Image 1 (tube, helix red, strand yellow):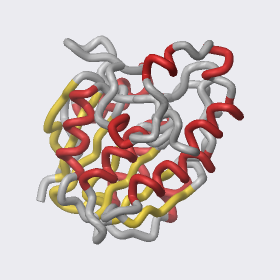
Image 2: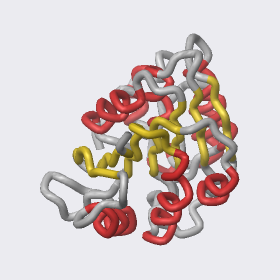
Image 3: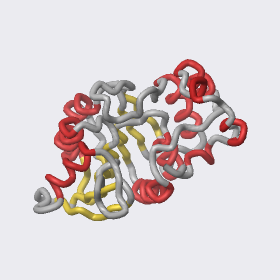
Image 4: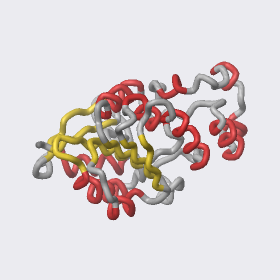
Length: 230
């Protein structure tokens, strides 16, 4: 997908033309990539389109608390760091493994240490307080202590069961007027895309009779935004 604005945060990155010359076997080597990414020499892999990046930033702007389920290399976290101020909180949840094999392409793994270093750089100057949970998002949701969330971005496990469980355990933490954004949830939809699991969850929950108190607000590329009514 086209990169969003996340790459603009990597001012120290090697030039794109030079990075393009790197052979795939070296680019995808987990150890080499962790070193290069952790030190800021390469940007995170973009996991959203440019239009999705713009919408995610708009949803997070002025929020007090944003939760992201599924961080990977932090391309979405970088967007949130750009719009959340120092009084806000960014909660990042990722086990840094893909047991169902549905969320990531083969060979794409992220280093939690490298991603944490990158996010810390992005949040350092006037950015939000960042809380990390290196754990399954479903387990964290069951014991999440707060604060209430203005936005929950569901982009973790992509099996239907995993995505549905994320909704089940996290939507009650959303403040009135807050939103949940499902990524990769518009497979086979007009101008859409994504994966079968998140798409099936959105279709089952929101295409006919949405849950009480919720409405489907917007769809864009692979992203579906639902909002809790006040």
